[in-house]
Length: 171
Image (cartoon, rainbow, N blue to C red; front, side, top):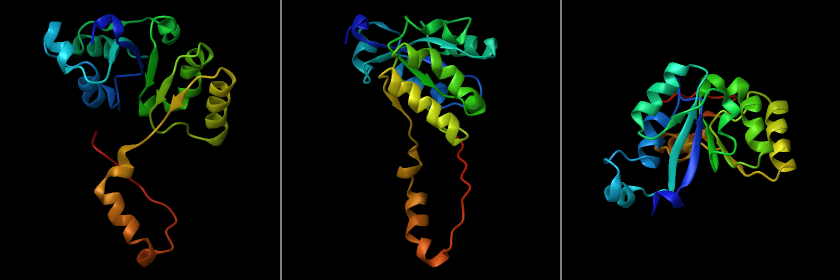
């Protein structure tokens, strides 16, 4: 795939508890030295091209890690420069509604990592804004595919009633 044909992806919030830096980033932007090798190994049809973080040093480090990524000064500065956006920082989830707003209003598709929101009103505000502007949004977790989750589900009847759970991962 030619570089000009790639979906340009922006990353919002990248410096703390994120999956983009160590998990998704290498898949989206494989570090193989560029050129024809990069075109052959790029499996997603995407390239991370821009990044922003409240911690400018974190954004600068991200851009050094993934060659060709431009750091922007304000979280809204990627509007008009990217085709899609990843919002991915657990510590920033309290601000997801505000961070997503300019992209949802501009019709930029977004992946919003978990937790999608900390409360129902914020979740509803994000969904309503995406609906109003016909902007695709997605949120998901790989926990549903973890073998440990299947093991626990199979034992629910034995341990009922279950009133909650706490899960942590090291990603």
